[in-house]
Length: 243
Image (cartoon, rainbow, N blue to C red; front, side, top):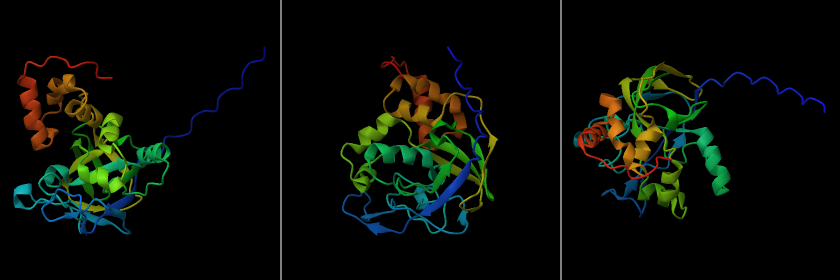
């Protein structure tokens, strides 16, 4: 019996990069929960660097961390802990296969479409240097009606939730410009288990994980930190396998 041919050596890992920077204009729709009736989910790639800075708190208007970007429902989106939303191009490609339709960069309402990064596998508190900005991962994206109606896919909230690859929100630690093609440099990775996907599952399908979320500490968004502290102090009975 002849020996099988040797497998080729794997090539170098791709350099993590921003594939596109995406922003939105205010668009009137019938399905948003925003009182204005406007949404900013239709984000599209732009050319040239975009200024990224800390947006106001939600009490003071909130909004996006990207210049000229629009956030419609500022009660639930935007503000310092959700200044930037990143989603992996690899996950968009995967959803293209599942849904049988093309998905452009920005199709999920993300500000940064990345390549070479497992965005949902990043840890809360992880820090990225991109262009002139320093960003920190804070929390997961929770799907909403606007997202579902925008995509027009039946049962989308449930499908997206079960997939548990929600993409990451980030806060701005140092403002600066970010452009397509900029490398994403990992400058800090905390020593705990709470990834974006872990947090998302704790919030949605795996409540037995909730007491462990507190390990992410102050890097969590303010709302998530308050919940984590409550979960850590609760007498939680496991709800089943984390999967």
